[in-house]
Image 1 (spheres, rainbow, N blue to C red):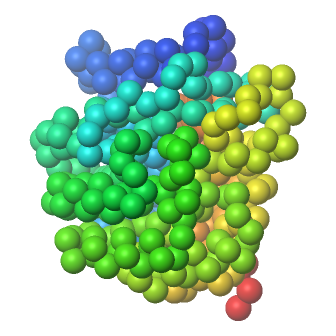
Image 2 (tube, one colour; image 1 turned 90 degrees about the vertical axis):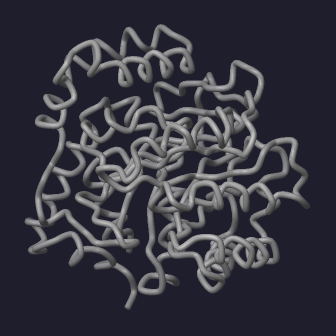
Length: 357
């Protein structure tokens, strides 16, 4: 399988990254129609079903801790294929009330030697109505699905809460969890909303609109002190979890000849930065909220390290592109080996094992 994917990757990497992603999406959406039974075959190969990996979180059962991060399935088209590939939860979006084309192309770049990517997509998506019509046909779904919501580019920051309010109202009955995205670097001034006063006002408006858990997602490009304050504020005002982290605009992390001076970095180049800020937040908030780690996770060992730092769940994105479609299976199998090595009967015993008590 590794050799097959390396061959496939060499072909995919001849295409512009956004074109390659679209080809993969079309293939995943049409797989079962073209080859009946193909998703069942994939699930047999990729789904790791072991009670040691299961957790009950956010009023849902998570059969394993590995999810696909927001941005991969923006328009909620790939649920069935991603589930067959062994993911334990799926985050769709970021989507906005109105459809929007996103930023000018090219806006997605591979930093191949560093197993990283740089994206300046800008919340390109089909909009609330189209995505709602798609999701309501399959909800409730086999595994938990998270709605990652953001504001439209044309919506001024002073009116941003209205956009989040619309999306919470529309999706409250057709998702298992919300993720609040105010941390993308690709919508002008969006990160200005990573502000305590905005968070307080936002949660005061949206909490009464839904019974579903709401997760607050932060960027890695702030001081650890500010990250702790921001996440603590979100939890104190009603967030059920914190997701650390989004992409980085710290371009000093990369030495790639393909590096641009715009867009967010993801993949191996942000692994340490994301892990360090996660540790700072987890040391403060572990036991007070549910923590989700994202950023540079490409192996079971990397995922397991963050689990022991306090993460109940982890998410991947870039490693799917560089390591291939078996990545969720490989991470889960390695986590099982590491749990056994350390004498843990279940992942729940390992979560937070390294947090300063």
